[in-house]
Every structure is written in structure tokens, then in C-alpha cells.
Length: 170
Image 1 (tube, helix red, strand yellow):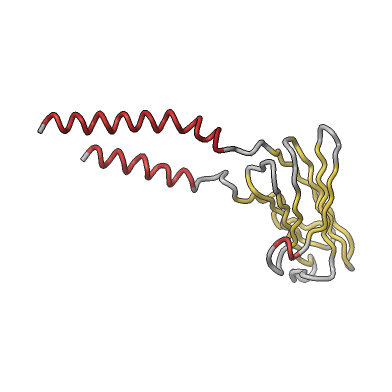
Image 2: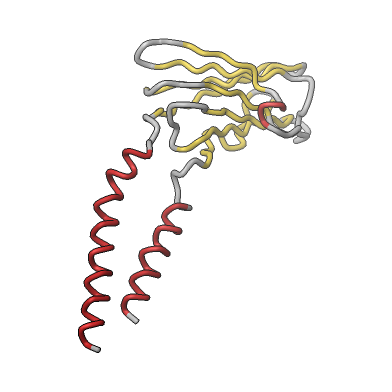
């Protein structure tokens, strides 16, 4: 009974941990903020930001009517690495977002702290919001195995010991 409970706990915990926060979801940086003639929702992912593809999303509503703006505006995103001043700029569009509701721009940042500026320009005027995010190195299989390997060996030894002890009692 105790062996089964130990196995369920170990593997059950691994499943819960794999779905926990910080495993590649997105993070909201600007939540329905009225900026000039627009209401902006800005988020980015993955979270935590890692070296490789990083996507900034924006959803734009008209501040006066509340209507979502899906066309007739231009959304651009600029990323500036704070230490070096290196700048990248991309136009956000529906194709990158994968839907007709949102605008998205893709970046390939390196490790460092970045300031992202999202600018919306349209017939009603212009709006700009900034946010900061830190890009960390990608977690590789080698790092994961170095951390998890000893833990797996210890769990295996405990299970083997419990099974051997149980066999002795019979």
C-alpha cells in the first residue's frame, strides 16, 4: 500500500508541477488601459521569457464606443535591450496572432532586460504603452536532467528498498 501511495505521489506531483505557472504561458503587462483614443490589452509570451521566439500581443478597442478595432489601425512593437541599447522593431498583425481579434509581433531576443513599446496609430490618433521583461537562457534537457537525475535515482532506491523489504517479510 505504501509503495503504491509513494508512486502516486511522485508521479502525481510531477504532472501537477508540469502544468504549474511559468511553463510557457503568457503574461499580461497592460490590462485594459485607456491610452488616448484606445483601450489597450497587451500581453506577451512565453512566460518566463526565454531566448528564442518571444511574441507580444495587443488587443485594441475604441475608447469612445468600446468596439474592438480589427482593421484600419497600425500596431508596431519596438524592443530595446537595456544594457546595449540594441533595438528591434516589428509590425504586429493578425497573421502572427493566428486570429482576427489580436495583433502580434514576433521577436528573437537574447538574454537580458528589454523594454517593449507598443504603438497604435489610426484615424482616432496615436497611443503608446511600455513594459519591461527579462529574457533568461532557455532551459535545456541537460539542465533538467542534472536537476532531476539525482532525485529520480533517490526515488528509485527508496522504491527498490521498500519492495525488497516487503519481499523479506513474506
